[in-house]
Image (spheres, rainbow, N blue to C red):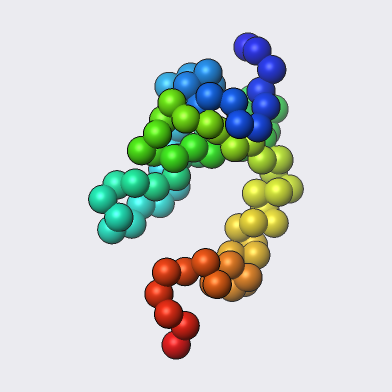
Length: 82
């Protein structure tokens, strides 16, 4: 396999192995993820499977998920704060 890098075409990572970790009421447009052979995680937009893949280390993904769980990303929500 060629070098895996941030922003590479997601199609270059193959068609198998992509998963939707969650899906909401947004018409099916969501993120898809793939665990790579070296442990990193690729993320792509499901509506653009040929588009760029963002590549994260396990530590980066852990920090993002734990921060989201702790409410650190709540400012990104489209609904108004209560």
